[in-house]
Length: 330
Image 1 (spheres, rainbow, N blue to C red):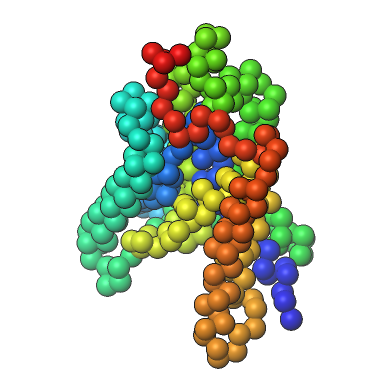
Image 2 (image 1 turned 45 degrees about the vertical axis):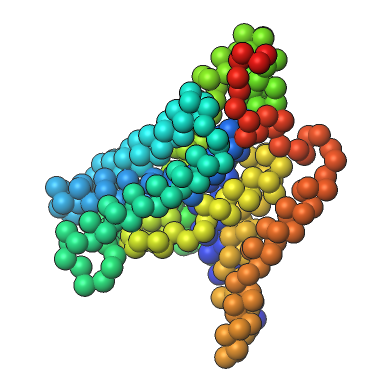
């Protein structure tokens, strides 16, 4: 029998990195920047948080840690690392006007290599017998659920059993949707993404908004990598363990038609599809289980086909997405 009370919390936990990545990429694409480096940025956000937590645990005994330092240091390191990646992307694509597709793929390759290099170095420093490093003391602070969740039965398990980063992801997505739709900053950002020449003629600083949106989006995506390591993986870092979540987050941007609030249910749907094979009966037939693992990618392909058939303008990507802006051609 399908255990829905057990399935939903795991689907939500699986969806949070996707939600962070999708929200960050939506903000980036609203400025006209197509950042395919999101998977690498999420990876860098994760490893920078691990480095910060590792140095903190080495310097402070577990019984002397405070929640402020145990959470604040890894989060600050993660945000700084992902911010630097966003600045690198902007410098190449906005200032130097490099090709955005190639730059994004290069950022992803660099980010994964950066994470594997420093992750492997930390593993060697600990002389671990397994190719991973565990930061359980720090992870306990990130995974702390609301104290009264256990006493509320199924309601507590489904809605209140997550760490604070899960709720922060939802708050950021809702706040991003509000800013984009109801504020002057959001109006200017959408104008830059749709028609930068017209926005420039209206006195809007194109480079400023592209830098701002891309760097903020990168920092949000980096928190997705931090969540995966510190909460979902219980503080355990293993090289190449992040999987393809960054690419699924980019696919979610299309699925949600560039609306951050729609990314919340969409990410939970994809998170559920990602682990559905664990709950469906397959017996000893491993080939059926492998077919179930294909579900999120099949849905992604279907979404891309359906999206390409949409004719409504409001469901289309920003008109200047992926195109460099040359003021001289205005």
